[in-house]
Length: 441
Image: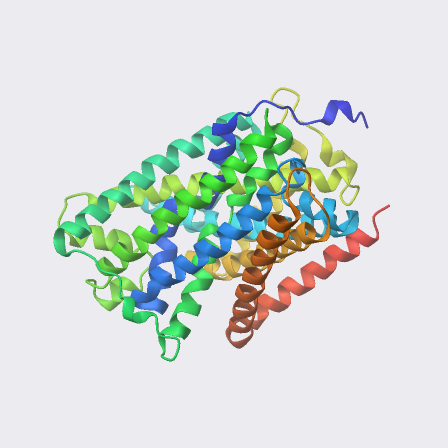
C-alpha cells in the first residue's frame, strides 16, 4: 500500500473546521427534539440542566485545547488519548468514537427520515419510513463522498438557516406571553434534584459532536489554530443558544395540551398554536436542514475514524483508499455507512419509531463520548504538554475529569435502573473493540 497516496489533503480553513463542529452538534436538533424531551422530565428546571452541561462540556473543550500543539488528525480526540496513554488506549478510544458517531448518525438519520417523510406527504407523495430513511442516508453519503469542504460549508448554511427559524419561534413565544426561568428549582433537598439529573443526560447529548472538529485536523491548513478555535466556538455558541431555548421553549411547551407535548414534533405544534400561518411548516423545514447537517457531520467524522483504524491495522488496509478525485476516504466511508444504513432499515422494519431509535442510540452515543472525554482528561493529567503550564494543565484536566465522572455516574445509574440493555450492549461492543485492538497484527 502506497502510504503517500493515501494521505488526506490539507485544504480546510477555519470556517470549514468550525462548521464541522457546529454542524455536528446540530443546534436546531436540540430545539426540536432534545429540549422537549428534557422539559418532559425536568420541567422549568430544564435550563439548569443545560447550564450544568455547558460548564462540564466547556471544561472538556478546554482540556482538548491543551493538546493544540499535537493535532490529532483523522483519529480525532482519540489521538490525544494515544499521545498521553499510549497506542493501545488510543486505538480503543478510536473504537469508542466509532461506536459514538455510528450511534449518533443512526439517531439523526431516523429523525431525518421522519421529517423527510412529512415533507413528502405535504407534497402529495405517499412515502414510507424505510424509503425516507434511505433517501436521507444516500443524500448524506453522496455529499460526504465529495469534497469535504463542500459538505462542511453545507452544514454551516443549513445550521444558520435552521437556527434563525427557531429564534423566530422564540420571538413569537416571548411576544405571546414571555418566559421566565424558575430559580426556585435550585433545591437539592426537593424533587427538582432528580428532575435536573434526568434533564442533564439529555443536555449533555445536545453538545455531542463539538469534538468532531479534531477529526479534520489532518485536513486543516492550520490545525493548531483552527481546531481549538472551532472547539471553543461550537461550545459557546451552542451553549448560549441552548440556554435561551431551554428557557423560552420550555415556557411555550407548557401552553400545549399533554398529547401535543408528548408527540414526535411538539415544537412544530407550538408554532402552529401561536397562530402564524405556516410557522409549523417552517420549523419542520429547519429541523430537516439541521438533521441533514448533523448527519453530514457524524458521517464525516465516522469515515475519518474508520480510516484511522485502517491505518492502525485494526481494520483492513484496503479501507485507507481515497477517492481518486476528491481525496476523501471513500473506502472507509462505504465500509462504515452502509452497514449502519442496513441496521437502521432493520430497526424501522421492526416498527420502532424515530423517537424510540433516537432515545436508545442517543444514550448509547453519550456513553461512548463520555468514556473518550474522560480518557482525554486522564491523558492530559498524565504527561506534560507543549506550551501549557503544569498548574493550568492539572487544573483544567482535573476539573474536566471530575465533571465527566460525575455525569457518567449519574447517567450510568439512570440507565441501569431503566435501560440496562443499553449499558450491557455498550460494554459488550467495547469489549469487542478491546479484543480487536489487542489482536492487531
